[in-house]
Length: 178
Image (cartoon, rainbow, N blue to C red; front, side, top):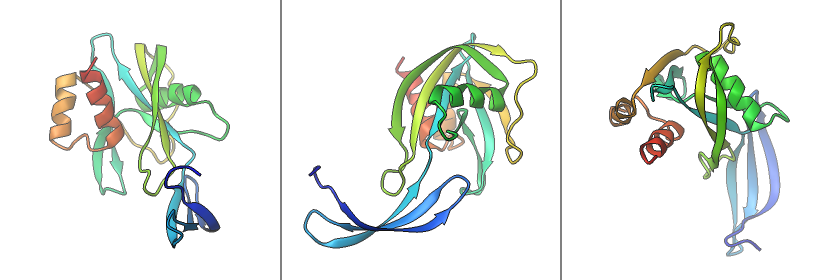
């Protein structure tokens, strides 16, 4: 048994959506008691730290309905079924920013909200960027504005809560340590 493991007794599917699935698991706790866990299943995602030749961080601003506001983020998107993260990273960078990159390096994978979701994000850094003449279109329900900012400007955006999500704050802090 894994330390503090909770054994699933029963799973009840609640919702099967375009992006996420919601289920309720009845579990046996390490002390023998029974509890319910609300779990969101997510296909996983990628995020890209894209840095221009001038050392600018490529960001996008977009509205996030769950927050009822716009925030500034690194380019990111969900994995398609069976898709390798590097393929998703290349596609999302192009769709959201109009950039391609000669050099993609995988940095690490991390979880976003382990208390209730299984989403993982595969983080890449993209360098040697180039503009794509006929870039791929954004998803039909996606609207973004491109920004290119210095590391110092990005750090201030965290302070100002314009950068408000964990993946982007993590990316800015990672860049600051390099």
